[in-house]
Amino acid sequence: MTAPKRIGKQTVAFANPPVIIGRATVVGPKEGKGPLKDYYDLIAEDPYFNADTWEKAEYKFFEKAVQLAVEKANLTMDDLNYFLAGDLTNQIISATFTARGVPVPYLGLYGACSTMYEGLALGAMLVDGGFADYVLAGVSSHYSTAERQFRFPTEQGVQRNLSSQWTVTGSAALVLAAQGQGPKVTHATVGKIVDLGVTDNTDMGAAMAPAAFDTIKQHLEDTGREPDYYDLIVTGDLARIGHRLVQALAEKQGLDLSKNYTDCGLLVYDPSQDVHAGGSGCACSGVVTAGFLLQEMEAGRYQRILGLGTGALHSPISSQQGESVPGIAHAVAIEL
Amino acid sequence: MIEPNELEHQIAIERKLYEQKEYQDLVKKIKPKVPVLRNIIGAFLVGGTICLIGQIILDGFIAWGLTARAAIGSTAAVMIFLGSLATGLGIYDNLAKFAGAGSIVPITGFANSIVAPALEFKSEGYVFGLSSKMFLVAGPVLTFGFIVSVIIGLIYYLIP
Amino acid sequence: MTYILAFVVGGLICVIGQLIIDLTPAKITAAHVLVGYVTGGAVLSALGLYQPLVDLAGAGATIPVSGFGHSLAQGAIEAARTRGLMGALSGGIEATALGVATAVVFGYVFAVVFRPTG
Image 1: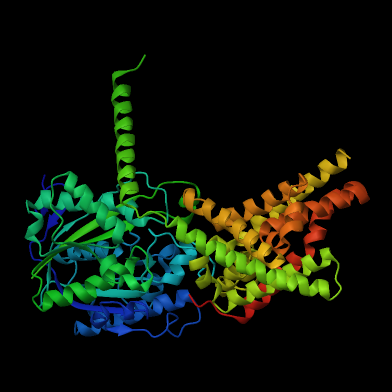
Image 2: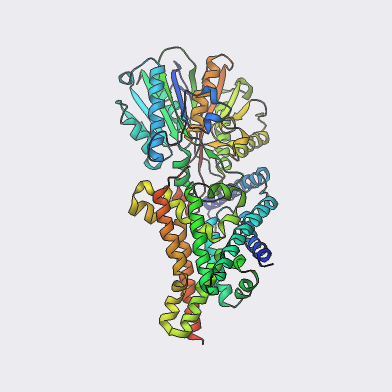
């Protein structure tokens, strides 16, 4: 018994690669001053986004991104078959509250910061499997909701570690379709949990890097491709330390990731923005992929990209109990 | 006696531990070093300045005619007021970026640790949000402080 | 001279806290430092080691939270001597009541008035 679309151990190759026909990004003011500011659809002037709590602000970002993505795909909400969404808040309330206004079957996802790619992989499977014509996938994160849930209240006077990362405030949404014009999702490699015992919850890059490398390696093995098949291999939010660690792990195994490998956490902010190691959060890989990477592909500057969402699947409780941080990474090949 | 399966299992565990150790060594190598000297300078300057401000207020209270003990208590109260205000205005967390322990260790840091969560969790209401969460850090400080003070009191009571 | 001593001693007490944060694993947070300083200050005070520092540096020793521990310990010791068992239990809290009450009241008021800026 072999599933016809499976190749290798963890990869699926889509027979009719689903097309990304709509994409939208909404970000906060800090991201709007970053190096990718020209790629976002909407930059909020205020991280509250006219809401009275951070949590409300986060799902307002999300609602706006969803609305824009559907509009840009020239669809209405009723055309969608599934809404796949997730975020970082407890019980993924941002995604669910956004889904109140999306009158289609909803599947909530939690993959921490890997959720954009988890949604993209699952959405592509639904479309290529013949279960959906249109799937909407989206994520959000907010610096202030994440910070107070996972670390300290934002006004608390603490010195952030050099390895700490800055949660991206914003939301990204993508519309996948069975047919249409745009970059296509050709392969998806769903990652497995890799935990090498990192317990420092201010060093997420180090916790996730082994998972990211594991998935990159597995993807290349399963597809028989070399790293230079891709114009760009991009991980989600490993930032400076995690990015270096992936390169070091690759070097050890004889894979050359020195030329075409980067990370969304490095792209989303300028080092002068006081973000320490770089960006993180669901929206980090979300807005860089849906904003920058896909726009560059549409413009023809990149033909083939391997994107990975990377997630640190810990909770505030597990951290306080001294548990290590399990990492995950999902890879999706996007080609023209 | 070790069963063969058990041995295999043990080898697997050992291998995993070795892998973890190897990786964590790599992380240590790549992680940027903490700029200890820079941090110490920040902590010294800001911590010292906060204490200097305290001394000026303290001298003021003494000149005003307060006893040494009352002046110390009143100075602490004024510093708590200043720390709370700076937190509410959103200044204190920016100061802490440079100062580190220089803004945590003084009593103003204690005030900051009360106002910061109180502000942040106000959105969950005045009882379970603001009033409950304001003791997020202050709670443990007071708990340990009070327990130690009672132990010390008891020791002095029992051993005159 | 008192100002220089307050500055230098206060600064050095903070430097020790900075070293604790920087040279220990990330598990040791600001909250742990505050707890450690208060208990440490109380213990040093009970051993008679903190008062000389206060005499030397004034606010340089009372403004760091170890000074809060010092007040707790001295309050407990004095009350235990004058009022016996009841004093031993209540002395520390009585001596620090002003600080705790102001912290709670200002904490509440400023949290009501202001809004987190993120």
